[in-house]
Length: 173
Ligand SMILES: CC(C)(COP(=O)(O)OP(=O)(O)OC[C@H]1O[C@@H](n2cnc3c(N)ncnc32)[C@H](O)[C@@H]1OP(=O)(O)O)[C@@H](O)C(=O)NCCC(=O)NCCS
Image (spheres, rainbow, N blue to C red):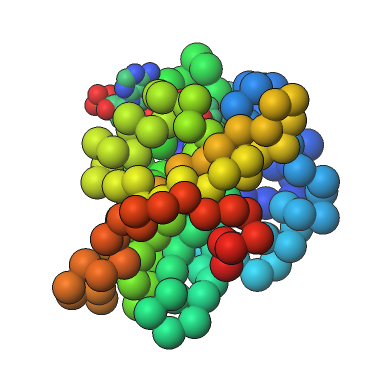
């Protein structure tokens, strides 16, 4: 049976099959442990019956006042487990946690070239809130879309009124 459960330190030793994907960032171990320590409820993994990692989501809650929101830091599903609804299920969990924390919205950054993910987020109700110029460093740098979905606390959906101009990474809080 496929299991969704909280991510543990041991999972860092077995997520290579998922992280080898070029669109999945691999961070230093301290980055993951920081998330585990601060926001364990936002760090969930999907495990196959044989104990293989099928995918995971890592996120956090941050911001002040009406900027209090849930953030998706990483979402990835192994190539052989795609189109099974796993990413949608993991996003649902993160949105539920954000609702319980009384967040105003959920947001995430995605490469403008990552059409599959952008399409998925749109299908899940996210809109492009703003473009962040040269957010991803590389050769060349790449812009990000900052995508958002309002939570029920944002009754007037103020958080998802798109900005009309792009911003730079230093302007993103
Ligand atoms: C993007 C990603 C997480 C999607 O994972 P997934 O488990 O395959 O997604 P789901 O099965 O939950 O798909 C949910 C919906 O998204 C859309 N979608 C997902 N993959 C799609 C694809 N390849 N083509 C078209 N639509 C797609 C569909 O609407 C799908 O619903 P449907 O299958 O009922 O039509 C996965 O492709 C991945 O890990 N990519 C590499 C890492 C990445 O880009 N992460 C996001 C960075 S911000």
